[in-house]
Amino acid sequence: MARPLSVPLTAAQLSLWHAQARDPDSPAHTLAACVEIHGPLDPVRFAEALHRTVGETDALRVRIEETPDGPRQFPLEIEAPGHGFALHAAGLLDLGDPDAVAHAWMRDDLARPFDLAGGPLFRNALFQVGERRWLWYQRVHHLALDTYGFGLVVRRVAALYTTLAAGEEPGPSPFGRLADLAAEEAAYRASAAYDTDRAHWRHAFADRPQAPTLAGRTAPAARTALRTTAWLGTELTERIDALAGAVRATWPDVLIATQARYVAEVTRSPEVVLGLPMRGRMGATALRVPGTVGNVLPLRLSVPPEATFADLTRQVVLGIRAARRHQRYRHEDIRRDLGLPATGRPLTGPGIHLMLCDDAPAFAGAPSDIHQLSAGAVDDLTLTLHRRTGDAGLRIDHDANPTVYGEQELAAHQDRFLDLLGRIADADPHTAAAAPGRLVEH
Image 1 (spheres, rainbow, N blue to C red):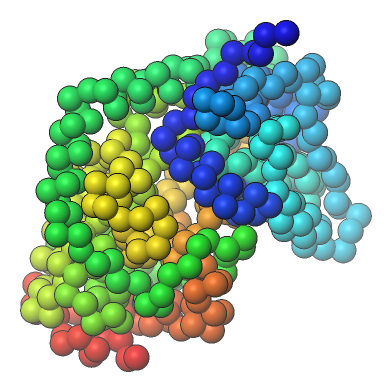
Image 2 (tube, rainbow, N blue to C red; image 1 turned 90 degrees about the horizontal axis):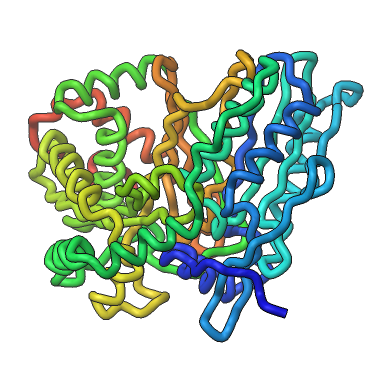
């Protein structure tokens, strides 16, 4: 009997496949979010919208297995609504603390690994936790979707639900095919653009710089991650916005520059290399296909003691601009070009992840908020910045590899980072910075 047609893995998927193979039972390589829906919701109609979305999304209807030609993605049949995949649904209104029960269920699920060869590579749950409040939990293996693809799926479910609630029949799917995404990547890797991107990164890192980390040690990603969260109040957030205006940058640029200054001061290094997540999508096909092509690229910054914060922020702006132009070139390829081993010496230090929440969708008029639960495995330490335009405050998550950082150590890093951020927001960005060690006490 002939095997069904299969699709090769993208370069991003192949990297994740090898990472998962090093610890097959690890649940860490997943994306998960809790979508909090404020308003009336029909769970039957929601299930229909979710099922239709899965039917439109090739990446969610696959299983992945090793073949003589390497790992391949094979199609997975999804049957009629109510049969093709499980949607755990529960009304929790009669319980004392519905939110606590729902989040306990989510934590339990986050600890369970996926069966890559059997599939499916996603799980969903819908909890009613208030008369007009619902929690939609979605978890997907990172092999199936990256953050951008995850967002496409969430917004499509909301759009289909809204259309069905209006009594209308949805139009054609906006999604492209997974095979086209793989073909577009293959074409890029055989193109002159690939050679140009390779030349850019080889030149930028020809001297193979060290990437200092806050812990000064490295370890493979653990099965779980530590997290500590801080909420910046209105007053400090407004000062950050004002500082961004003063240096002709954006508030994320200010936070990235602050992290660079923090790493430089803690490690007493005049140069840092931060990890910068990128979509890795530039072609029209890639922008409309849910899948995994996301990339993490090095942002190299010079942070001498005499540099002004305005100078550092300008470096950030220009560095991000250059990285975006060459964002399809894989960080694994940069490591190979530099002669670095697949594991061990890091290419980047701490990472920065930006979560703009303006695209949280509405479900037939019911607004939602998206709460990130997992952004995948954490090798070292990552700052995740959450903000919705117009919000008075800003949320900062510090996620860390527990093999490298302890809970108290992570909390101390966050406290010192926030202290530095407040000092920078009060200082003149056009004057020289204080000497290393002045702003951060070790």
